[in-house]
Structure formats: structure tokens, C-alpha cells
Length: 476
Image 1 (tube, one colour):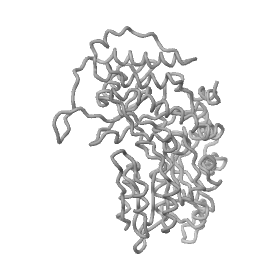
Image 2 (spheres, rainbow, N blue to C red; image 1 turned 45 degrees about the vertical axis):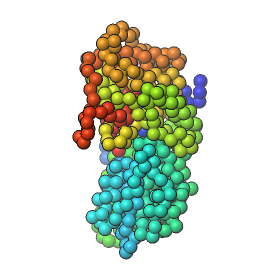
Image 3 (cartoon, helix red, strand yellow; image 1 turned 90 degrees about the horizontal axis):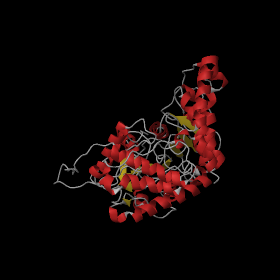
Image 4 (spheres, rainbow, N blue to C red; image 1 turned 180 degrees about the horizontal axis):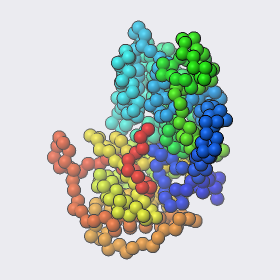
């Protein structure tokens, strides 16, 4: 049994699902339910006294757990409702001044970032979006050349969400410091899956969330502020939680903010989200990100090998082939992906009570591989056969080409047991899921999609290889 095998039972969904989508929503630890129950018990039995006994300082408690995972000192990480809000708080510490008015980001960053940055143009900023290449990369040299003395803020993703490419964060942060620009690093797709050391990187701010690789669920995002910046930080997005004497209700201009990371907070925090996040953070800290990274590299390598094996059938991937540049996700471009997505959604809708359930997420665009991706979860054991079965099932020729007459002849498979003991049963899980999927979707003729600006043609866009019922990528 591998060192990570013992953690499998900590995640209930793994007893019935091959869960390959931690890049969107991490699996819930069993202890998260227990912690949420403790929250309910405190509210029910302690009432308003719970604020004094734990809740008021809980953002710092959770922030310190995150700090130890991302290489930050205690007292430097504040908690926020979502990553966009965390970005906004960091931005509110800056302002355009003279010729230094530019915000630099890339077109491969998460759209919520770019929406927020563009909105800052109303406050006097100018936005410069460095375009992405056709292979969904960002040319580091081009990004560095864009950062100059007119740059106020450089905001970029540590790991690109479409391809899981690890950006050259050290070089970008160094260039920003050379010209006196503030750096905001987005760790949404890096914290918990690859080693992160915000102190060594020297960034001014770093943002991230617990809902993905940190297995903490939505509602618990974080903001790291470099300690020397924290001493004088005065975010304009603020509130009473940031004050040193909040219950004095002093509204004068000379009130004093807290000296720790909570000076970056604003209104009343979401306490249930903090309880939910505790279990995942404790588990990751106990395992260690280095061990997680080692397992992730073995899994991503296997997925890419499967893509190469099936390349003649139309499989491809925009994921970096250099393991040093690839984080925890492999995006697989599947043949006839729109049809695959519609089919898997139809099957899951008709068999929601089955042991194995399917999910899909798909978004079309002018170029392939623009939006969706298939993620893997490195913290828990999946044998090679699990990954093989998932890829074969979603991309099976009969399935992708919609060969339903032959599919309908597939005999009813037996139920899949919740506990799988070896790789053979992992293989059986994928086979049964595929058989069910093919059997319970009505016959449809193969259809081609007509783009708005062109003739009939097949359109290839990515689809998630995942066996957990759901609808779309969860919002950030």
C-alpha cells in the first residue's frame, strides 16, 4: 500500500467515483462534515458567545494553516469570500499615479481576473492584456517586455487554468520589482498541487482559494500580503473586521487597523466556509505538497501517454510535455467532444441513481481547447487501469461516433461495488460506466455543428474526463 493509500477513505466520493476534477472542485474530506457539524453545534449551543470563543479570530486561524502550505509566515494571510474579492482588496492598496497607470496581465489568466482589471479603468488604470499563443501558452519574453516604468501592477497566474502550464513566476516577479511595479500572484491552480513559496518569489500579494486542490469547498479564498507591505497597507476595500477595536464603533479618521493580516479584511466573515476548509488544509499539511506533487507527476505522465497511444483516433492535449512545466491537470481534446458531452449528460440524467455517474463540462470557441479541461486528483490512489478506463470510456470509438445500434445490444452489467480492492475492479468500473452510458442513451444520428461563420464541419473542443455527476465547471 502506498503512503497516500491510507487517505483514500477520508474522501467519501472515492468509494463510488473515479474523481478526476480537483482543478474545479476538490473532493470533500470526511472530516469536513464533522467540522460543519461542530459549527452547527456551536451556533446552536453557544449562540453569540461563539464569536468571542472562536469565530472572530477564525480567519487568522485558517489563514495561518494556508500560510504554511504556500511558504508564508504566520499572520500574513487573510481570508475572503472568493478570489476575485481577494484580488480587489490587493488592487485597492494601489492607485494610478502620474505615468504609472498600467495593469499587466495575460489573455490566458482566468476571465474573472480580467473582468476585474478592466473595470479598474474607470479608476484611472490602463489595462494591457498580453495575448496568448495558438498553443495556449504565454510567451514569457513578451510578458517581460510589456512590464516597464509605466506599469503599476503585474497580476498573473502561477499556473494557467486552461493547460496547467506553470509560469516562470520568479522571472516575472523579478522584472516587476526592477521597474517598481506591484506583483499579485494567482495561486488558484498551484496551491496544494505544486510547491509554492511566496516568500522566495518576493511577490507583494498572492491570492488563491480552498475549493480546488486544497479540498476546502467554496467560500474560503485567501490573500497573502508580504509582511513589509502589510505594516503600511491601507486597502480602500475595508470594513470593521480590520480594526483593532471593532466594538468601540469609532468612526473617526484616526481609528487604528490591526497589525496582522486581518487588517486586509472587511465585513463579517463566512464562518461555515472556514469550518469546511479546515480538514483539507490539515490533510495536505500532514501529507506534504512534495509527496502530492510526486504522485501527480506520475499520473499526468500516464494520461499523456494514453493521449499519445490514441493520437491516431483524434486524441490530443495542450498540456506541456515538460514535467517541470506541468502542474496537476491534463486537458484532453476528445474526438467529437460536443457529441460526447451531450451524450454523457443525457446518460447521467436518465441514470442518476446508478452507482457510477457521469459529468461533463464543455464550452466551444473559435479554436480548440479554449475553455474546458480534465483534471486529476493526486492525493488519492488511482491505478493505471482507472485512468485507462476513464479515457477509453469517454473516447471510445462507438461512443464518440454514436454507434448506438450496436451499443443497445450491450447486456446489462452487474452493479459495481463501492469498495474496490485492486486494479481489476478499477478497470471494471470504467467498463461498466461505459456500458451503461451506451445502453441508456437513445439512438441519435450523428450530427455536425454549423459554425456561425462557415459551412458544416466537425468541431473539436475539450470535454472533461470525469465520472462524477455534475453540470459545469464550478465558478471561481
